[in-house]
Length: 259
Ligand SMILES: Nc1ncnc2c1ncn2[C@@H]1O[C@H](COP(=O)(O)OP(=O)(O)O)[C@@H](O)[C@H]1O
Ligand SMILES: [Mg+2]
Image 1 (cartoon, helix red, strand yellow):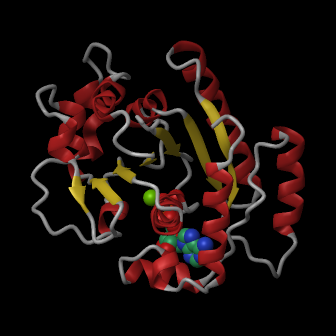
Image 2 (cartoon, rainbow, N blue to C red; image 1 turned 180 degrees about the vertical axis):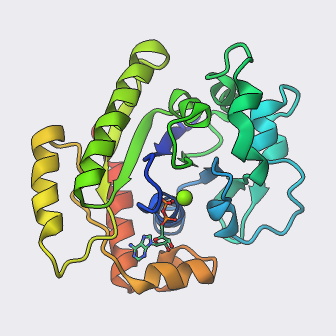
């Protein structure tokens, strides 16, 4: 039976909110703990996602080539990682000035989607780690996706940023991708010793209703340690609280009602 590929953009124009960590650790939980086949795509010129895995082959082609060169096919940009069940499309520092390169192309927001169409059914999940921006690269990601997952750190600026993100989401949905859904907002880097998170969660729920994951990701050193070892946290320390949280998140994603 042909499988359905669920394509999820991990997006927030704010940096440091846990997009890359959540991409790695959700991918880890989906593949290691739920046996799903996952492709992760790095669209950030900072290459943090790429650096979170061991990739043995030489990375001749990256997401940059995929976006700027019409002749480059998606299969040429996919590499195996040290984690069985996770493949990656790595990124490159060249992505830093990609907006200029794309801005005069026809169908410039549809490039990623048309390339990913060729691997429909090959993976259970494609997780796309977006840069901290709402640029053309992010638009490509939203157009290519079925849903968006929004990691957010509790705080006032966070709420303001979410308004803009939701506006962008609505525009993309209206103009390019009418089936785009909100997978959920994921509270990340939460310090359980303060009650800021609880207040924030309350405000969010007023705004977004049930679009917030029940799972909350707490601020823990295991996340950073696992990253240094280039492992998803559920492989780094299966019994850690962080592993448990990302496994719970994976469970919620798998059973999201629109799936
Ligand atoms: N739950 C967490 N606990 C502790 N540190 C975290 C956690 N999530 C992310 N970090 C750290 O915070 C920094 C920013 O996270 P990252 O995932 O790179 O954010 P983004 O991709 O949104 O910029 C990184 O150094 C990462 O190791
Ligand atoms: Mg990142």
